[in-house]
Amino acid sequence: MKVNHSMGEYAKNDVHVNNVENFWSLLKRGVIGSFHHVSEKILQRYVDEFCWRYNNRRNKDIFSDLLDRVVC
Image (tube, rainbow, N blue to C red):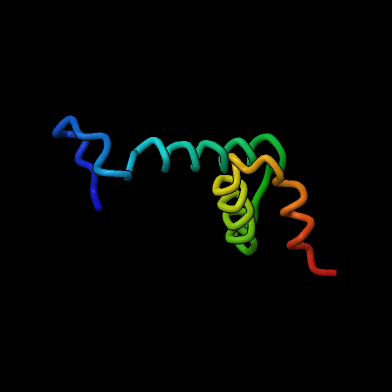
């Protein structure tokens, strides 16, 4: 689905431009603020981590959920 900005359109149904912009903002802040340098070799791992963070941003028990997913 596309959103056409030139037509003054910023959302279609449940698809909003802000969702994508918020995700990229979160990823950029993580790279600039915490990791400082991300090699191309492991870039996908960082993107996966921030996808998980973004998808769980409203989860009040995020730390426990993360610990449940840790494999020892």
